[in-house]
Length: 358
Image (cartoon, rainbow, N blue to C red; front, side, top):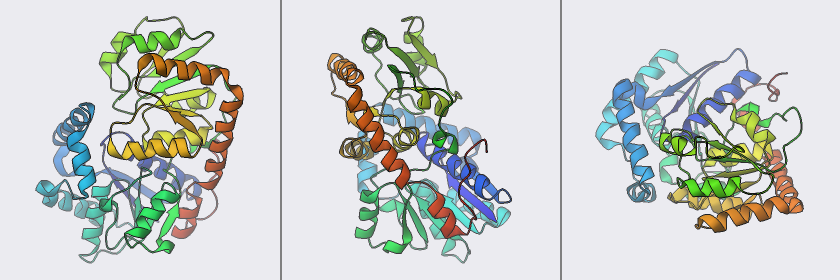
């Protein structure tokens, strides 16, 4: 079976979901030929796509009002380069002749659906990488939708998607996140992260206050935030930094509590690891609904905006071991209710997902 996964690097979540699909498929169908393609890199080249991604990162770091307007409008935001993107997907389909095309980005869903309407023959899967979704995730010609939650599925049904087309899979995460870590979880070990762009508190005092909590260990994944990395260098003996490329699955499985922006991929990585989540106050439109999901499902809390108050919440929760255990139990329920096995069955991939390392 030939499978093409189309995506883009607008933040790390879409790319992470694409890689999760790739690894899952290789586990259940080792003979499948899977190609993951950054459609913007294919259309614009390395230099052009890097410029687009830098502009996107700058827009999001400034708080995202322009981004939120585009998100809420439900209108495609790529019309000026539509012909280039269409040529890119045409080249990919002609080269790889996939039986299945999976999209982890709404623009890629629109493009793959439009190309399919020109006569191409493949099963098209649209994977929604947040709890909320907008109409760009839907298109004529999409055969299956991977929904992050029951709320996501309800939104799709309201837009006319047939119930039999919707699979509640959660946001796909790499199989390594679903493997229990060797050794015990480390009590009072906090992991702080902000996604691939490093969107997290930048005040040095916030991290000093965290490190001052008694008997705590703090690990900070700064992502691409080099400015924050410099601020934290040598700040406290019990505060450690990790950079891009570190084994987050292993680290998350050993930690006691996660502080992060409420990105879709991050939430479901935490669920897979059984890790309670304290979400930073969300700034982007879709992450506001993600944060509501965290709170409503009982897998974590949303931190208040104030630095000192946030640290008090962290300290209180670390003291309330029974509350942390309740949150872990809720993550276990969600973990059991999600996963890509149901998609594999619908696509004709045989067997259930083996654990990494089997």
